[in-house]
Amino acid sequence: MPIASRLYAEFLGTAWLVLGGCGSAVLAAGFPELGIGFAGVALAFGLTVLTMVYALGPVSGGHFNPAVTLGLAVAGRFPKGEVLHYVVAQVLGGIAGAAVLYVVATGKAGADIGSFATNGYGAHSPGKYGLVSALVIEVVLTFGFLTVILGATDKRAHPAAAGLAIGLALTLIHLISIPVTNTSVNPARSTAPALFVGGAALSQLWLFWLAPLVGGTIAGLAYRMLGSKD
Image (tube, rainbow, N blue to C red; front, side):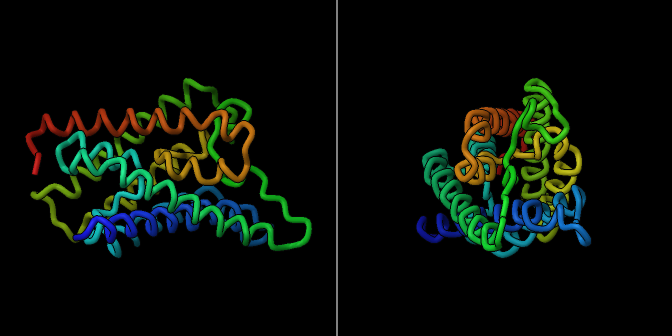
C-alpha cells in the first residue's frame, strides 16, 4: 500500500477518534436530560477505534496513536523508518478532529467548551489525582492496550476479532482512568484538544506524551519475549 494512502488512513482514523471520543465528552456527557456520563464516553472512545480498525486497518494497520506505532515498531511489527511519518499524520488528524469539534461546540449562544476533554493531573484531574497517579495509570494502561493490540493482531490470532478486542480494551481503559486523567493513552488525542484550550492543558501535555510512549515501548519489548514476532 502506498505510503500516502497509509498516512491518509492514519490521519482520518485519528480525526475520527478525537471527534467521536472527545465529542461525546464535550457535547453529550453533560447534557442535562440525556447525558451519557463516564460510561458513555468510554464506550464512544472504544467505538471510534473499533469502527476505524475495521474500516482502515487493512490500509494502514489502524494505529491512530503514536504510542501504538512506537510499540509496534519496538516489537518488530512495524518499520522503524516510518514511525515519524505515522506520528505526524496522527497528530494532524487529531487536530483536524478537534477543530471540527470546536466549531460545533462553539456554535451556540453563550457556548462554553470548558476543559474541552483535555487531560490533566492535580487540579486538572477530574478526580484531583496527583502527578504520580497520572503517570502510573497512563504507563500501565498503555502497556495493557499495546499488549492487547499485539496479541489480537498476532499471526496466531483470528484476524476478524482484532477490532473488537482493541475497541473493548480502549473502553475498559477509559472506564478505569477517566476519573484520574480523563484518559489519554494516546499523545495525539491529548495534543489536539490541548491546542484549543492552552494553559494547563499545554503545560501538562508532556506527561501525556511521555507516559504512553513509555508504556508502549515496554509492551513492545515485553511482547518480543513471547516469541511472537511476525
